[in-house]
Image 1 (cartoon, rainbow, N blue to C red):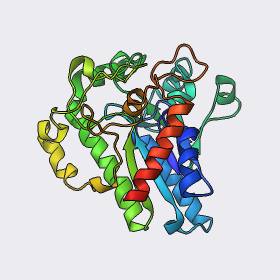
Image 2 (cartoon, one colour):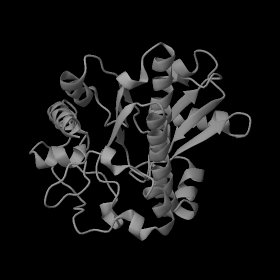
Image 3 (cartoon, rainbow, N blue to C red):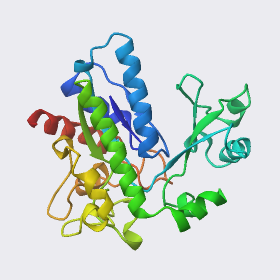
Length: 289
């Protein structure tokens, strides 16, 4: 099982599966943060176990997205503008901004406004802030998210929350004897400032992590969580300039510019070739561990 944000693509999990297993499932979460990504993964794993699949037969590869992507859980009971937030979200990406949770805790997605209005939607949902990139986070279409990122949500809190999510999945898998690994979309563990807090694009890596401080050494409250994480279960792409990198750095350093196949506008997502090669890279690393 593979998962991630929009970097969670069939190409890399299918490539990995060709070497390590005969069945695969990708849980892609466009615009999602690690809270929502890991919630969805655990939900789907529980379904497999309840259907009779042995936990020991499951292999999980969770592709972590950036620490600044927060997912806010909202509901109709407590949030007086719940319906307004939902409606506005469907003017700004729809399913890329909202993931509904039904009354049984299951995931429900409405893929268009017509789909949204076809019958009553659930009374609770994850609101995806998208992080600190363009049109998200500090530039979000929702004022309260802009204010929250600018005035109240510190980088230290963002990073600590990310480490907590890692620990949730780590504990869940270890308790059930599920084999699991983490890999990042790009480096998320070294301290970045200014223009370094951005995605890799085309053939450009804006953050060379060698000789940079780890965030756990910059933000003191994170150390207690950092020290609980089993980093032997992480797979990174590294070279002389990149430490703790992921598929974005892997793609660029292998001469494959970022950008989806057939999409002239996209300049930050790995294409099919990069995903296929990264799947082979992951399978090789997993076999060696």
